[in-house]
Image (cartoon, rainbow, N blue to C red; front, side):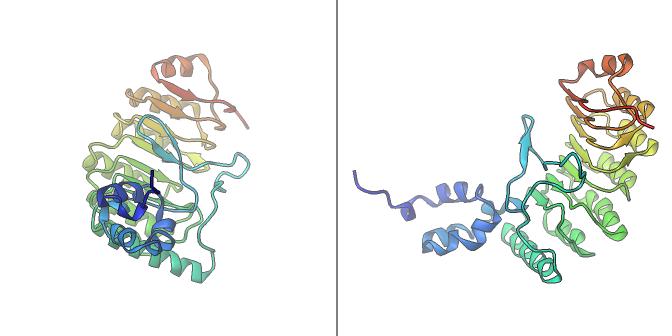
Length: 273
């Protein structure tokens, strides 16, 4: 049997493979192999999953929702290797990479995941929203300015197909949840990585996202009564993670309400001072 010539693979096979390899390979390696591989990278289907980190997200649940790995002792220091440095040049490089990748997707991008330490500029989320109308999943960095957080809230209205969102700020979150409720009818996964979930946010989740399937509140402080509000309001929850949460414990009432949930993670949650 002769040696396989990978450059002669049908283009639809190349596109299927290249859509899974990651942005770094699509930019730095694959186009340099041969002309047919370079031409395959021009297909927008290769650029539907835009993960701006060197390591892929950890994945969980039947829908393979990306979940970034959290360090227990440093809530927002995710265990992922950043692909760009954090100098001003690094920020500029990220902006150029985002513009390049989004441009190559030609509106077909369905997933955008940023490294937690990524630095986004004002107007960048709005720019993405205008060019990625088919977005289904968005994982945001650990720090966003006040203005950018509200850019996210406003951009939700453009993402009618949005199914999953990861945020690391309470700024504008109630407006974001309200806009999800009004505009994103397939939304089912919310990850909130903050120090404290206040009562207003808990009520917003319970009252405006009653059909949510997955809710991740790991390491946050949340009042017991606010967790009960969520459990009573979100009757279709299939996966709830309140592990290492301060203010709650698996008492009889909580466990009874959570009995219907297929995956209920509460390990390490405690009632503190």
